Length: 76
Image 1 (cartoon, one colour):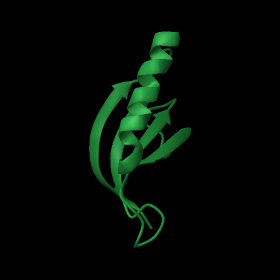
Image 2 (cartoon, one colour):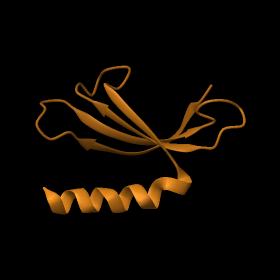
Image 3 (cartoon, one colour):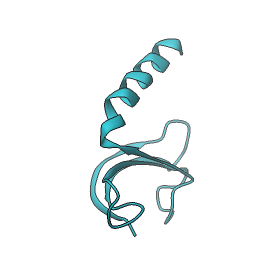
Image 4 (cartoon, one colour):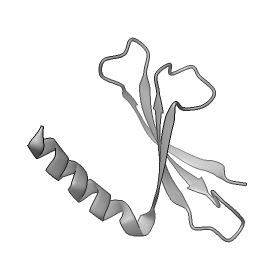
């Protein structure tokens, strides 16, 4: 199944001592024919092997997700 193609960025997770937000691209995340996605993993411990939460976002949805995040930030 899918494999991490490239780590894009690691961001310190606010409110944790060692947490990270890790953003990567994943090739063929579900099967050989599935579209590459951006994976956003939330790690409460940066050294953990697997994230506590993960979201996969297809390329065609990235702009809409960014727009929604900007709107959410304005509401905070």
